[in-house]
Length: 539
Image (cartoon, rainbow, N blue to C red; front, side):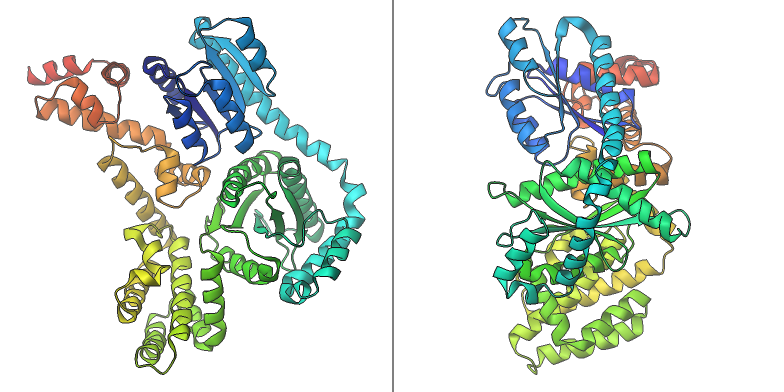
């Protein structure tokens, strides 16, 4: 799915364009709008956008200034300038920027839609061409990559051992042509391919190699990274933000670009690829620990064949506490096994024993904290599997021990969460998925006058936007935008029948900034204006 952002300080133009494109290709195009450059950059900081349709001259921040910031964050984003100014200097500056189009507002909606369609086709064609260009590099890199794979497999198994001899590590990097800095932190991304049938060795090898080509075509020029195949046959990339890049921006860029990689793999290879990525950079000595955490999250098999992106949301300090807690208490591993197997009685017995050991003081406080985080992460991972980690602020409560009044309250919360998880486990997968989508639908119905965009819903429910879009369509048979429109029409009809609210007030209550936009939308769906609908109902 492509993402389009419309930016113009004239609300009537922004709203009109939004309505046109929102109805145009709901399965293929997710549309958002902003009324200023500042608001547009806020959208950009939350999610990847493929196309920005923007005015050039706006108060506060011009379209040209905004474009510089967009290109710094999303280099592949295409810009279409839509302006009423035909002065040569504006046009000249615009066409100097790579991947930019320039249109006059007087050219009309048809020309704008035609241009957006052309840009979408260019993006699709570029993605296909990148695959073939990367194939020409295969033989040149093959031998060097095999050596790098072997080296990183050993490093992943015991990164602390390698880091203890930093000088040797630096020499190894230079000798193997590894373009990473052994003195700077890294991010990890673990990719798993979902095969439609049991692949042969050669099929699997070719598939993994093809995914690597596509990865390189998107990532090679924007972030330092190296990819290897781990001992389980999954793809692992080690990425390094450049010294002047904030780590949170790199993580956001990584999430957005992985969506493009997933879509390219589906279209070009017919392969569904899921990713589990670091939420925070880690030092080289902690690579083994971070890799183990990503594998643990990956093994939850979220997505059920739908490409998804799961981000490890625990910072390195929390991860370290979890790791030490798990190692200090062998029983934590037993508890995790009971949780995974759905053995509620055994789990509760072991949890009670550990709780009493911590609360009656048989362990020091630090060990109690470690045990708490180890169990909390296991529970959180299970909730993530059911796409329910957002419920009642559960992420903050589980992963923040300080948020509880006492250690007793904290362990009681672990027990309550576990009971909730075991109840979910008794439901089949379809029921769990339906449960999640039902909650999203309920949120939409109750917040129609607020932000119910795909990006916002994905943020709130800890989904990747593309994954949520596919999951919703799979479960409900219609797109998310179509469902929102149905809710708005239904709510508007109720308000028109049940009260004396003015049309502009009803427009606001169902999520429209302008009454005339709501009127056009309502008439298009029902064949009547809101006022005529009300008169017919009364009559």
